[in-house]
Image 1 (cartoon, rainbow, N blue to C red):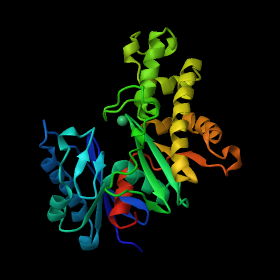
Image 2 (image 1 turned 180 degrees about the horizontal axis):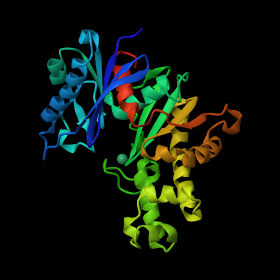
Image 3 (image 1 turned 90 degrees about the horizontal axis):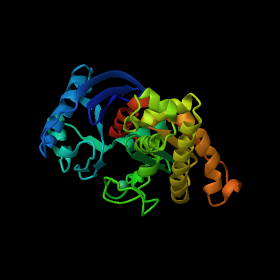
Image 4 (image 1 turned 30 degrees about the vertical axis):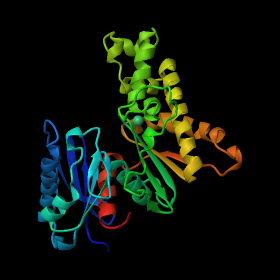
Length: 320
Ligand SMILES: [Zn+2]
């Protein structure tokens, strides 16, 4: 029997803390993420995380041995500093590990949230039993987590898995990271919304346009997936385009990492059935060795919005 582990997932709007015991969530606490105008979020953030953990520890009998792991939405370095966080800009550069460890009087492991989600899916979710896994988390951008040889691949400084910023077209759309044509500009929820607005402006997607009140600029990614679920041919064409780009980037990752399984998660994974099928069909034609190599399983994530917190708990107890 392993001792309970606390995992915390820090998001742009909320902080979720859970207690993981025997592979299941047995307690949880949720708080809004504090905000600060600029630069000063770091201190408030470690305090807020410590409060969430403190509340869980109080309710946990024999909590002295309870481990703590935290997932953060950005480049979380092994030096304990959050180097870049597009959804928590005012926490950029925050040193989090040392103050958290002092406040909680124990070791605290920190990592990128998508890394944590990949770890969770590979240990307790859809990729259980697979030692080599690529997980792509589709939301505003594309986050990622890589499991290689059964371990979470963190890289030399903790920044591995920033897969959304592989450049697929140097002449493509500008990305917030400063490069042009990053993968996430073609295959994220944001890309889906942009393609939807383009189509609406060009007079296609009449059904969606009607539903959003006639303004092409009001079309969002969710509207496109909804219409596609209902069988709208133009929406399905957009899904096919996103699926092609998704497969293209995944094929690049397969060339480097040779995974046996690919997991698609994130906000779009509620509609993953729309993407998983087309990606699974396209992928072999894009790979060296093509259809002669054993098939790579492509599947939707299973653990839902708690995957990040579950993975953080696993990481904290040394199961990374
Ligand atoms: Zn980028």
